Amino acid sequence: MKQKDIALIAVVVIFAGIVSLLFTNFFFSGKSRELTAEKVDAISSKFDKPDPKVFNKDAINPTQLIQIGDNNNPDPF
Image (cartoon, rainbow, N blue to C red; front, side, top):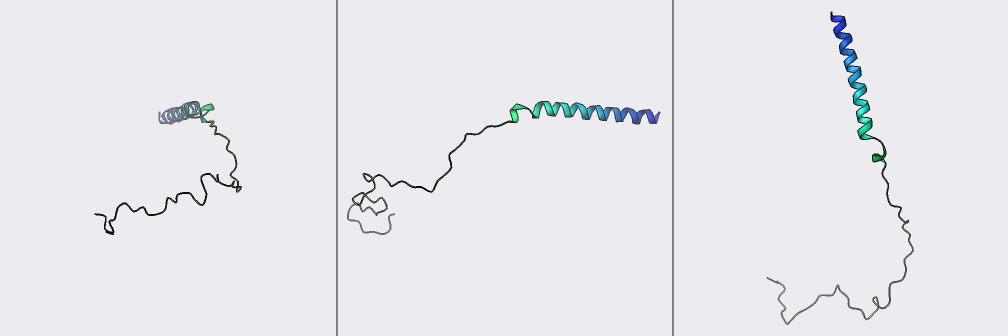
């Protein structure tokens, strides 16, 4: 009777393996795994000159320190 039990267990294991393989192939493969991405242009080292209307010698420099009022206190608080 032990030989029949071992054979039955082997058949059940093989059947369960085949069924699980089929289910995983059905759920985790196919067209849902095929992803697409947008095609982008290559980055070039060519740099056009900036607009002279915005970038000129008379433009405001945003990195300058702005002083409001006559307060010369270095500690703001």
